[in-house]
Length: 193
Image 1 (cartoon, one colour):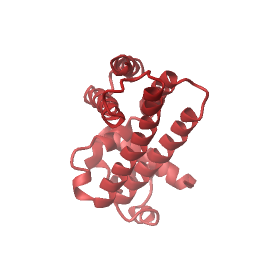
Image 2 (image 1 turned 120 degrees about the vertical axis):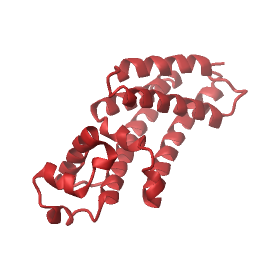
Image 3 (image 1 turned 30 degrees about the vertical axis):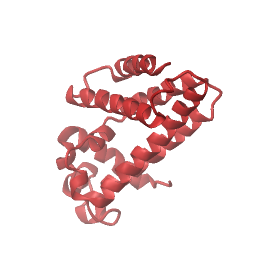
Image 4 (image 1 turned 90 degrees about the vertical axis):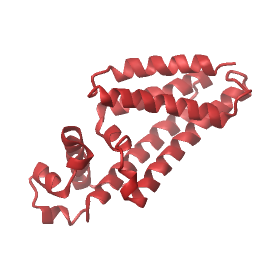
């Protein structure tokens, strides 16, 4: 995905607004103010708020894909890959918490089929990566084989999502990298055979 300098600036300005005002505060008017643009100048890049949100989700999706691909293709063992996938996520979101505001925003998907589909694709991308590691772990008898890989991935992704929700609800006050990693290491202990 090629992002122009202007689009990158829009992503960063959108992030500031999301953290200050939430998803409802992300409007073309507020974004234009944040960037010292006229609203009409912003419309040259995006027709509406939905297109801005779609760009943010696409940016996140591409970022995750690059990070996960690197981990999955590394020489790490299965246990290390499982932990590193989550460590990578906690580190990224710690530096970019505005993406969690988008992903966990209630009602965001209700108003837009395109946003809903983009978030579903993002979930599918994550699921494929986690399932690759879980299947590898089941094959080597590291992970429980009595529970399907799909269910183990569901447990892992649900645990991750709950951890991120707690972080968001604490106004990002938790040490998400330390606390999140501890949670996922404990989960891995439960997933082991």
